[in-house]
Image 1 (cartoon, helix red, strand yellow):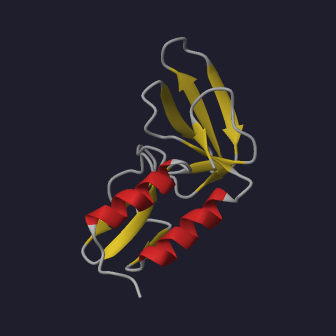
Image 2: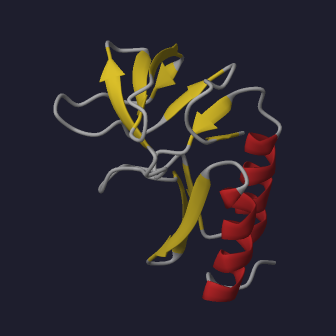
Length: 128
């Protein structure tokens, strides 16, 4: 049986989440997993009151064959290009690449909330 949601467990879960480009937070009586850099109000991929269930979810994400872009990387600027692609611009050099993949939601004028693809681009920090 799981203990109630607590900060010590959240930190341990978050350490696992960071390796796949996510973060774990506590809201009320639940652990929430969200992509790093998610816009305010972005609903997570998974929420639970169970430490064990969250760990299983994070481990299953780690086994995926896709890569996630670290949207908190201050070295790049990311913008949506249509519904399934993004442009990543390296701030220091202006170098830019477009990458096709998956967007969870695109809101005109808002930052990209999450992006994943089969092969990471040469620009940006990528996580499984």
